[in-house]
Image (cartoon, rainbow, N blue to C red; front, side):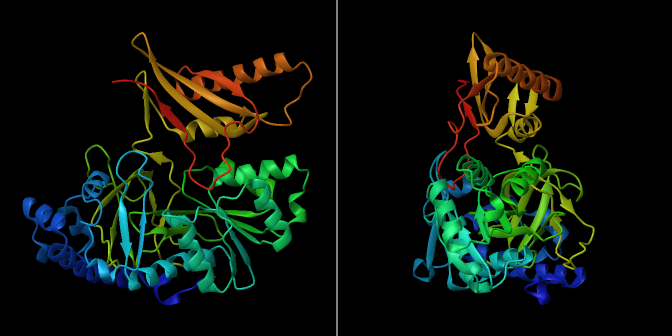
Length: 434
C-alpha cells in the first residue's frame, strides 16, 4: 500500500525540484542558526546562493560523527531548546553520545516516514504490531510506535523483554507484525524451536527488521523459522531514526523518503561522488528537519543506489541493503573483511546458528582472528567430538577459501552469545594495541 501518493509517486523532475527548494531553505537555516555550519561554510568558501541543484551538493563540506560529538550536547540544534519537544541520543559506547532534538514538525515528519515504511510492508489498521526494540534514548522503539499508531494498528511496546515473554505476548495478544533487530528475531525463532512451538500456530505474518546489517540468507532463515515475510528498513538516530528508507512487498531495495532526505554515495577514501549503482559510503542531507538539520552527513554505512523504477509504483529512489560499515571493516594481514561476510559463510554451514563474535588480537607482533560460533541445539550428539571437529574444520576452510584469511574457529554452546535484548549485536572485539 502507498500511504502518501502525493510524494511517494511524485515524478522525478518534480521531486528533484522539491528537494532543491527544501535544500536551499535548510542551508539558510543552518548557516544562520548553527555556528558549526557557519564556520564550516565560511572556512570552505561556500556561497550558499550558488547551490541551485542536487549536483551542487558536491560543493558543500561533509559533516562527520566526530563533528556531532564535539557539539555535545546542544550546539548542533538550529532552534532554541524551548522549541524541542523530544530528545534522543546514540548509545555513546565509543565516546560521547550524539544528542538529537525534534520539534513538533520534526515529530510529525518522523511519524509520517515510519508510517510509510509500515504501509509499504502491508501493515494496516487491522494489525497488531509488537515492537521489540528498546524504548529509551534509542530511536527505534518510539519511531515505529508513533508510525504504527498513525496507521491505526494496535501497538504492543514489548521492548527488551526475554524471548520467552515475547513469544507469550505473540500467542496471547495475537501479534501479526514483529519489529526488532534481525539478530533478535533469530533469537525468538530459536526459542520457538526450543519450546517446541510451531510458528504456524502464531498469527505472525510480517516482520520489519533493521538497526544492523543482515543478509538475504538470514532473510530466508527468518521467513522459514517464523513463517513471515521479512522486510528490511534503514535509519540512523543522527538523521531521524527509523523511517529513512524501507522495503515494499517486492523486496527489491529500500525506498528512500527523498522528500525528506537527499542521499549520495561517495568513495570513502577519495570522498568523490560515485555513480548510483556503485557501492560506497552513504551520505545524507536532511531537508525538512528543524531541530537537528544535517548537511552531507557521512554515515559510515556501505551500500549503493538503484535508479530503475520499482514495480510498486513509487518513484522514490531505492538503496540496496547495507553490507557493512567503514568503521567495521577489518584489516587483517593485508586482507579486508566485513563481519557480514563471516555471517554469510556461517549461514551456508549446517549445524551453526547465525550468532558469532570476531575477536582480533596481536600475538608476538602478528595479528590473529578468532571466530566464536554458536552450534545449534539440534546438533547431532552421535560421535559428537568427531562431528564438532568436522564442523570446525569446515568453517575454518571456508573462511580461508572465501576471504583469504586464517582464523581460529571456536565452537561455543547454544545461546551463549545471544542477548535477550532488542539492541544491536556487538560482532567485533578488537584487542589489538596499535
